[in-house]
Amino acid sequence: MDVPEQAAAGSAPQRVSGFFERRREQIAQRWADAPLFRSVFTVSRDEAVEACKAVVDALSDVTATGRIEDIGAPGFATVRRQLGGMAATRARTGCTSAQIADEVAALRGPAVELLREEFPDPSTADAHESVLALTLVMSTLRLVVMETALTEGADLIERQRQQLLEVATPVIKLWEGTVAVPLIGTLDSARSQVVMESLLEAIVDQRARYAILDITGVPTVDSLVAQHLMKTVAAARLMGAECIVSGIRPAIAQTIVQLGIDLGTVVTRASLADALAYALGRQGIEVSRADAGASAR
Amino acid sequence: MPASGQASATSLPIGSDADLAWVRQQVRQCAAQLGFGLVQQTKVVTAASELARNTLVHGGGGRVEITPLDDGRTRGLRMRFTDEGPGIRDLDLAMTDGWTSGGGLGLGLSGAKRLVHEFAVDTEPGRGTTVTAVAWVTPVPSSRTGVG
Image 1 (spheres, each protein chain N blue to C red):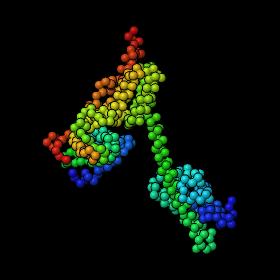
Image 2: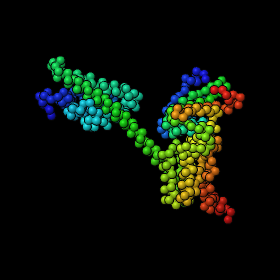
Image 3: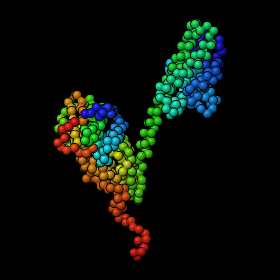
Image 4: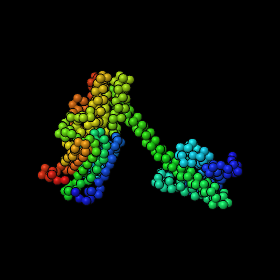
């Protein structure tokens, strides 16, 4: 949009913005051959050029607003996702963060070269200021890439944590009036809170009289985990349901005893099957083989 | 202790619940490599869990140093938990079963002591706390309890 005369009249960042617009095609062509783009867009060079153009456009926007040192500049918003994806792709192939940063920095050289060609006399103040502005905005781009990569990593971890909280605590209806929670993994305060809530809800929804907490998948039962279990059992009891803790492995049983935890108030069974048999028995349900019953009569 | 034992010591931060899980995992891995049986592994990991949580909850966070030991006859594992928290004012009381300052079961320190072979607490009010726990692959005879 900016014609060269206008661009030359503006400040250094604005001149650089005009430069990005005028030389969009050349810059994109050069960058597409740089390691960063070449190694990400391995299938098609056209795709690499398109990706480069998107970055050039973003830089043009950023420089036009003059916020060349601001990683929060709105202009970067359009390419953040793309840059994050590129950094992630590089990281997957074994690149360290420092190597990725270097690859982003390597984009500066070709751009500066092209900018210098625009000035017949490279020693003028205009030329110096423009090159400086370009250098600054390219450093900012490098920060944006690193920041995006880091934020995406943190977001991913947070999402996975949330998923883990929900996924790991299904309440299963085993029989009319009997529910079970197979506990898996670390039972910290946050998880046991989720377990307790979903179990109590299930007790109400299913009108359960018996609730089985199976800890086969819990690797460590220390005093805090035991306390969480006892609290859950007590809460279930208040709701009118009896809790059975099953799946206490031999190693964990010995550890609990030596630790000094008293689970005497809790009904425990070695396996989930035993716990179910206990719950059914208490409800007066007998399970027998169909053919055995037929032949007896 | 031998220099080889010192060289492979791992130091881990204790600053969040996620760190506790990491400490447990590392201790379990280390104990398994040293040849601890499943029951002993479970005991050592549980002791580590109790002590690491104490470091986090009462000491406001700190570090643990996990060192494999080898006294020539048997192998072992030393865990040293350090924090710069308020320290323990009355150690005898803190070591009493069922006594708690934080709403727990009050079995952390005393229980952990029963799960390992050697146990030492170095604390001073205002100066932080260091808890050292050592477990050997097979129980050492009582005559050698003073070693290490």
